[in-house]
Length: 163
Length: 207
Image 1 (cartoon, each protein chain N blue to C red):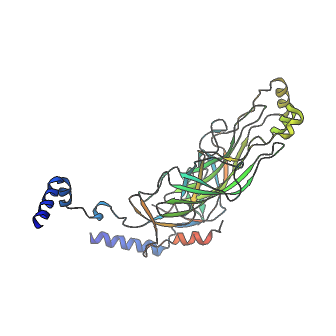
Image 2 (image 1 turned 90 degrees about the vertical axis):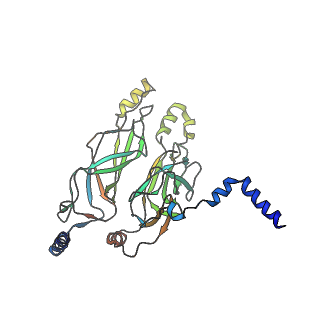
């Protein structure tokens, strides 16, 4: 038991002496590319809905990975408008909120917006012919890229160093 | 007189045996029924918290400065202890409200989250919400179909609907004493080293 304890103390001291960096500060404003984890639509999603996103690539600080590609990101529908009569098109806006890494939270800002489009000529024609004509729903397909930014600087463990 | 007193005492203990028994039973000390928290729990800055609007907040009846109630929709659990339970009350404040108007002008509203009440502790929140009334372009159609009357068509009010989910964040680190369902705010333990706490607080500008 004493030997194990002694070995642990020596190995701890050795790693400290080597000066191996185990954490890194992720600065405010760092760009983190994300992708949507599932399809979203103004037909099925409403304002306030929590949506799943994922990081599109590893996030590195001074060469060390602090957030792995594919990490779960929580986002929210910040605005949603269902399609309506008279050719009113749907609208869907999502914003990334945070990444949870253990007991740490990386707060994010950013926005992704999708508005269904209909030709103005089609609207005039359809309104005159069929006043009940509805517009299209806005959809954000799975894998849509969303750019987010770190809202607060935070110290994170370097993932590529932890054995 | 002494006999009367003895008789009264005897009859009382006979008439209420349960009382006599319960008073005779050894009572457990309070400490054995309520397990005190070993260490206070740190509720970190930026911990997310899911809230729900309990009542509709509309630009029809609020102005900047109006406070509104929210409820915690998901518990916040730290170190296996529920520090903020479902149903805890949180508050928000309308920071800007523009009523809807003629010609289909839709209302706009922004609000910020203030704090959540858990036990005796008030924990500051950060996060904001914005809402915009829908149907801003409907005035044109109203004029098209109703003529001059369409000019009196009002836009929709901006609303935070009842049941809408809002996401907030803990604004500052908070040390909490959690004993069962009782939560108190406390000070950081003397031997706790939290370098990140200082770093984050120092780097982040006030919002």
